[in-house]
Length: 292
Image 1: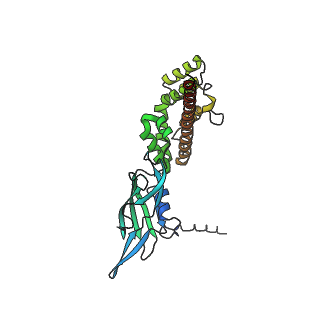
Image 2: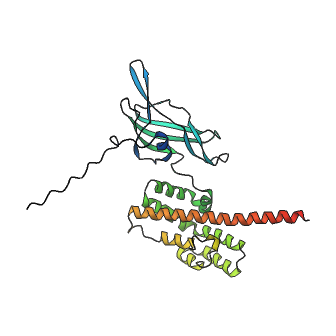
Image 3: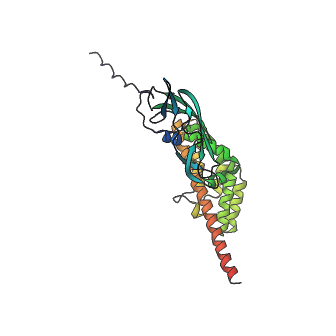
C-alpha cells in the first residue's frame, strides 16, 4: 500500500494579506524597528483636481519623556501633523512633548499604501531616541561607565537578539562587578556590620575573578539586598557563567532578560537602602537641632 502523501502545510499570509490588528498610535509606540505591520488607520487621502494623494496620519502619542521637567509618560504631538505625503516610500515623522516642549522623537518609516484604503504597510527603519521603554536611572547609575553597553544590550533584547543581548549584559557585569560590590558594601556599612565583614567586601572589590569575588561575600550580603532570600550577586554570576556556544538564541534571550531583571531589582534595593538611611539621618538631625 502506498504511503499517504503528507498533508500540505497551510500557506502563511503575507503582511499585505493579514488583517490589520494595530493602530498607527500603537505601532509608533510599541513596535520595534525592522518589523513590518499592516496598520489600520495609517493613511488618509486628499483630492487635488483629478488626482488623489495619500498622506501619513500622525495621531497623538503617549510616550515617556526623559526631560527633568516631565520624567514620565506625557502627550506627544507631531510637529507637522498629517502633512507628510506617503504614496509609497520613506518618510520622517517628528513628535514633540506637549508638556516641556523640549523633547523630540523622530521616526524613519517605510510606507506602502493601498489604493483608497486607510490601511498602510508600515515598517520602522529607525527612531531617535532609540526604541524601548525607559531604563530606571538607578540601574544606569549602578553600571556607571558601561551605560552605553547596557543600553545596547537592552536594544538587542527588545529586538529579540538573544545572543547579542546576553553578550552585552555579560560584558557589563564582568567589567562593573567591583562597582556593584562597592555599592553593596555601602549598604553593609550603613547597617554597621562587623569590620571583618567589610574587609571581605574590600577583598571582593579587589578580586579580578568574578567567581572568587562572589565566593568571598556569598554569606555577607545584607538581608535587604536579597531577592526572595537569594543572593543577587550569585544569581547574576550563575547567569553569565552560561556558555554562549551551547545555547540557542531563544535561550540566550531568556538569560539576558533574567540578568536585566535581577540587576534592575538589585539597583532598586541598593538605592532604597541608602535612601532610607539618609532620610532617617536627616530626620534625626532635624529633631536634634530643634532641641539645641
